Amino acid sequence: MSGSPAAEVARPVLIGWKEFLDLPELGLFRLKCKVDTGARTSTLHCDALTLLEELSGGAALAEIAVSPDRRSPGLRVTSLVKVLRRIAVTDSGGHPELRPLIETVLVLGPVRKRILLTLADRRGMLFRMILGRKAVEGSFQIDPAKKYQLRRWHRRGALSGSETSPPETSPG
Image (cartoon, rainbow, N blue to C red):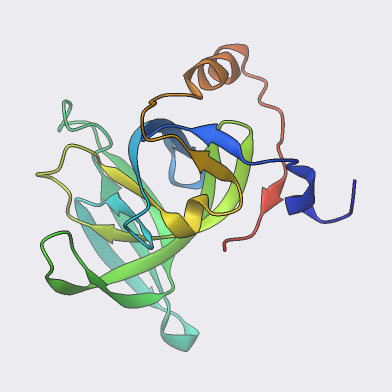
């Protein structure tokens, strides 16, 4: 194998149109997401964002609160994040908006990689996370007729408590 981490993933991992994933740096595990190749950037539901400190280059340190499961709105996970900047995104209704952009680690099946994602209020949506095409490119192949293709892997890793450390790749 070559020294490049991306080269160690021999071929794209097959995923369905919805999967469970982990965002360990944010304390979010077994988060249900919709894979959406129509969305360029991934988006995570955020209940609240509190700016704590301005950093150089337009970045900021912030605390976010996330309700990861729409069926349990009282469950909240808070995390410290570095907001890289705000980017213009057109939502599914065609409305442009500025959203905070962060970078974090995605774990989906055997793939562990850094991705960029925006934060938005997805309270009224079925999925708290949209996995966009920049996060899936190069690592995954999508079968839109299937769902939860990595459920068995995810459960095994969670039950054993000994996740292997798959290669980390950089975002697209």
